[in-house]
Image 1 (cartoon, rainbow, N blue to C red):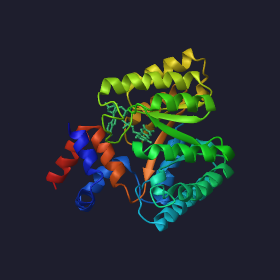
Image 2 (spheres, rainbow, N blue to C red):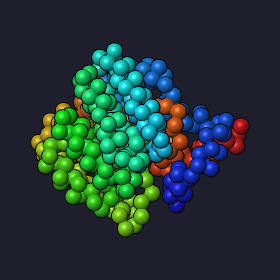
Image 3 (cartoon, protein in one colour):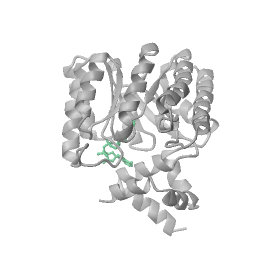
Length: 307
Ligand code: FAD
């Protein structure tokens, strides 16, 4: 029951101001967002890749309101690509972007988002890596898929995310699988109405399995974005049945969540990519992590009371 309340708060400016200003927030935030600058996260990139993990880096931010903020997002990602180039890690470290941070919701949003994200995708390709377009709320997805298709004409490795809770996703998965795209499948992290999305956890899990089967049997590169032990073992089984080799799909999990499992899967010879977010505009990302697991909220509340 708490999840939807927290997700509603994730879109409230008043809650954003209250929570961001609380002195103890930072300790809890650090568990999920381990830095504010590229310099903060370079040691983490080195440590995790040294342990056999791969990464996808996210500069946190979303729902911007001016074109200048979109240019700043582009520049933040270009600075990141510059540092990744120096580290020479190639596709072991890719990037995830939210198009709402690149101007998607502003006037002329499609053109603005493409114009801002394209230089990042180009720079990524020049250092041997790629970009995945995150999935935000359902109202943004037609636009995200249109940007994805446009970028793939020149950069076919550009990936995108689909969400198992949405009714539309089974059809999206068939289209993307046939097109040979890289696709990350997740359960879905936004508050969505019953007209467009499954509300029942079991229905979401069942949809996840159906969609994953489509991706595994298709022509593309499936990325299993989940911490759910049951879905992870089903993913392994579906990959085996589809005759995929270990480098023909990968697992992805979020930084700070089930970290032992990241290492276990990598040690078993799987490709395991850790989604690592950093930056100062962490509110929306952090609130979605709280909503996913009420125990996180209790931990957060306890640390506020104990100060
Ligand atoms: P759950 O059933 O929610 O979790 C399984 C177990 O994992 C839980 O029992 C718990 O032990 C652990 N766990 C899960 N979440 C947490 C948490 N926050 N804190 C502590 N423990 C936790 N969603 C989108 O809508 N768009 C995206 O672009 C997107 N990108 C993602 C990228 C990656 C790599 C991953 C892993 C997730 C992404 N998500 C995205 C979030 C996703 O939609 C889910 O909200 C999230 O992954 C939780 O679902 P789950 O599959 O892990 O299963």
